Length: 225
Length: 359
Image 1 (spheres, one colour):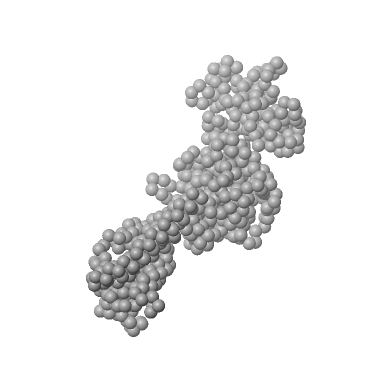
Image 2: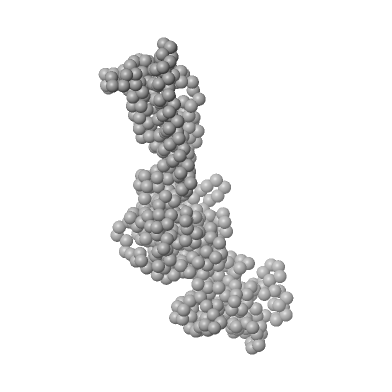
């Protein structure tokens, strides 16, 4: 990081967002698929739980996550026994928190994309001899690719801008938990407006470009269909 | 009919249930006829393994598809399914759509279709590189047919494949279906609410109403026996199978000879020597006690009245036997009384050639 003084928080943030998005796509896809196909009465309950991070204040999320991840809790303790590390105030803990915090931003676009694919084409695939996983990878996934793009961009962008939860769970440790939004806050607190400007402008530009890319691709594909 | 399987299904739904027991023939077309909401599509879906809650017993080609302990998944049953809508995969080309099934075909099948011949028969060679969105309704259904057939299924299940098409495209597909059934050695189950489609394509028929089978038997019997629900329909009709023996090219007319020796003149639909099926609607037959010669009507066929059914209202339905070919005629009460018709009487049927349809 010494080559780019002051940009450490930027790289840390990108690393966090990338890892979080990858994990979210792996976990979120089966959850979204299940939600899009299930007829169980429990569905609204699961949907509510998944959507909670959208409406909860980040400090509330952060507070509960802090309790969940701390070595005093059953989960935090199990993790400590397993790895010898605590989950609070370090990078791994941040990944955990981000995955939960950004969960709905990945699951919801995937769910609606899968719902658009519908049961009809999956039935057609089965009637042609495709087993469920085969049909999923050859029919549902390619047809839901716009949903995957939206989910990836939203999951990544949302993790990028996270502040409250990180502050509660990760604190402000350089190169460990000091992500870009926290660094900007610090710079402003210390009246280093120049540094705050640099980081803010990078984040603004990045957010603008990723969203523009997503909408352009979506627009193109919509026109093709 | 020789039997390839047996199906005995029970399915309970809210405010609706199906209970059906029937045999599956080893070749030919079994029509499942019923009005919308009668449960015929659900019945077909049970056979395909698309209804997880189906109960009962299905055995086909010595394989157990459904019993008390298992409900074999759709992909494990060796079927070809044609849905009401084409259900082509929009992200794949026509070629890739067709290969989707053929790549996954269950090995060890005995029938092997010639791909080239099938593409020619269905006339889809020029469509292979297109996307489904670029096809017309009729083309889509033809591609769906090719896709299902090249999977090499042991049975074809067709759920109103013509329902989503307009009359022009229907007339385009019907001959393909009729051809296929002559070319293929596998049985076809054809679900439809159109008496015309069913009578032109099927050999056996099941009539279903409110989830229960009302009639199960040969097509001719179903169409012309006075007790059958099909004879009571407004568009009740008889069908005759025959071979084209003569053609008058200048009038575009063909003479079709039935196995029993009756000659029917109808608009040309195939070449000399080809076997065809014609459908003669009961309301298109008029009756005469003597044979008249100065009529525009080309078909005047002698027969004996074999049954008379007094239909509520102003109509009478007559079953007429001509050299053992059975036809239906529907006339008014008034004509019936005027002509003093009775069973056993000889009568001349007049059938306008232009009213005869066939494949």
